[in-house]
Each structure stands twice: as structure tokens, then as C-alpha cells.
Amino acid sequence: MLLDTQRAAAPLSREEISAIAHADHPIKSPLDDDAVSRLLEHGLPRGDERVLDLGCGTAEWLLRALTTRPQLHAEGVDVSEVSLTQARRTAGRIGVDERLVLHRQEAAHFTSPQSYDLVISVGSTHAFGGLLPTLAAAREHLAPGGRVLIGESFWDRTPSPEALEMFGELADLAATVDLVVADGWTPVHGHVSTRSELDAYEWACWGSLAAWALDHPDDPAAAQALETANAARSDWLHGYRDSFGFVCLVLRRTSE
Image (cartoon, rainbow, N blue to C red):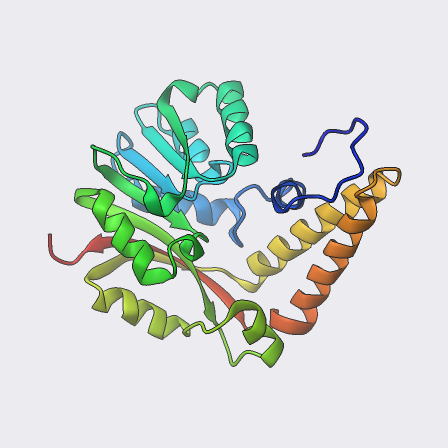
């Protein structure tokens, strides 16, 4: 959340807008808490793994995993200092900061001398240039027998021209999974976001941003926040609500 104190008359940055919009939906993907828990259970079968999140944002996946698994160690990579600062603050508050290391840099450029039992990249494939480049990056960090938890968009039905303009060319669900399998991966668990999860995510994001604008009428950025929320809600309802889908897959390498 932005500070409630007096702000300079400057537009909100994308980081600030994202922080406000995701205040009530910190996982930043169209997933409910039960789905997140199940995905982590399948990605972390032992509970003492070493985990890497490429494009971690506020490290919500890592924080949830660390909270329920006291033997776990985790690292996150992201370019946003705003998000990483929030992650560090939350980690300290819930007492997992000694088991969490955060790196501020491009996820695609991250290197490490060690390997990881689980590599996470949910909703961050754009940072690598697509699904297959993301899997290639994850493969470089993965320990033998390790798993990848990846989240990707797909077209659930034929998109409108407006939706295509917003998201570009996406495959359907079957083609997305086929692409992953052909790249040498085997899904061992998956979750397709339900209509309820997809709708809840959109309502939460643009509702939080609109509410912030209404709660801060004297803030110089209030008009921008409200305009952004209204435009994004309209894009969703009129553009991609009926065609957009999201899938998370827990993957193992078909051949080590």
C-alpha cells in the first residue's frame, strides 16, 4: 500500500498501482487459497526443499511455503524494490526471514552456484519471453528429481480482437500442455483456474484500486487510480472475460 501521508503531485508508477491493486489478492494470480496450498503440496512433497521463485514479486508463494514448512529454505528474484521491501517486511513479521533470501535483478539473468528442488514461475513467463524460455531457465536451476511450478495464460475459447490485442497469441489448454510435454516435461499435477477464481481476481484488483482512489480524494493520484481501475475493469468485462484462462502445472523432467 502507498503511504497515507501527503504525496507529491506525481503519477502512480506501475509498481505502486500493482501494490494497491493486489492488496486484497497478494498471490497476484487467479487462484484461491486452497488451490495455492494444493499446488505447493505437490511441488514440495518432503517439506525440507530448497525453493527458487523467478519473478517472485512480494514472495507470496515463498512466504506461504515457509510458514507451513519449518525446514524449508527459499530464494526469490524480482526487479521491483517496492515488492521486495514488502516481502522482507512480511517475512520479518511472520518470523521466516532467516530462511528467505531475496535478490533484486532480472529473473532471466539470475545465476546461482546451487540448484533447487522446486523452481516457481507463476504469471511471470513474460519476463523470459514466453513459456518455453521460462522452462529453459527453470531447467538450469533445477536439482535432479526436482519440480517446476509454472503458471501460464491460455485461450479458453476463441478470443475477441480486443483480447488478442491485449494478450497476443496464446494457445488453448491442450496445446499449452502438449507444448510442455514436447519440451521434455511431464505434468504430475495441474490446476485450471475456475470462473470463480478468475472473476474473484479481477474484482479484487480493480476494486482495491478504485477503493483506494475513493478513500484518498485529496491525493493527486486519485483520479489516475480511479481511471485506471475503470479502464481495466471495462477491458476485462468487454474484452477477455469470456475467453481468458489460466493454468498452473507441477512438472518433472521426463528424462534426467
